[in-house]
Image (cartoon, rainbow, N blue to C red; front, side, top):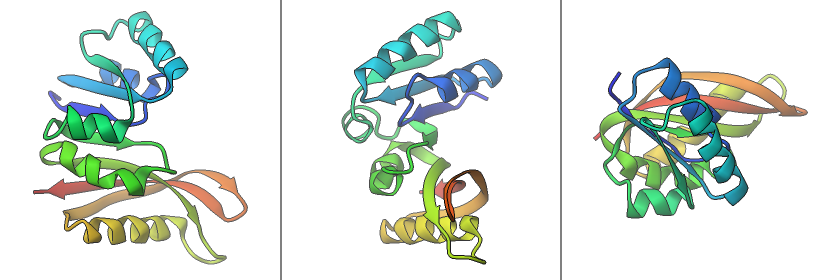
Length: 160
């Protein structure tokens, strides 16, 4: 309740709208670089009557966080596995204090290896490189995306 949320790769705004409708955020900054997705997001925000809480932003998430949203959020969603590890420095800059990162990763796990464990290792390595203080709270397989390839979401609490 009362959190400021940044959705770094919002697409048409699904996660942002769900958060606005089913929790009580102060604000959800909903970013996407694709102009068509952004237009759909603007429409979806209006259709769902969450204009007072969801702020659609057209732009590159890394640049938007760097230039406009540093030290802004309590919680940041990173639902684009292809860019999540690369954009972690920007997400860390976007937190205004201790806060949550919800990071989605694509993981290839050899037979017998838990993809959740592999995702935690990948994310932990990157956070360690960045000097972040954190604790992993939860990881879950979202879906299978190919043979031994999974999309995994990892929830991390980051402290200053």
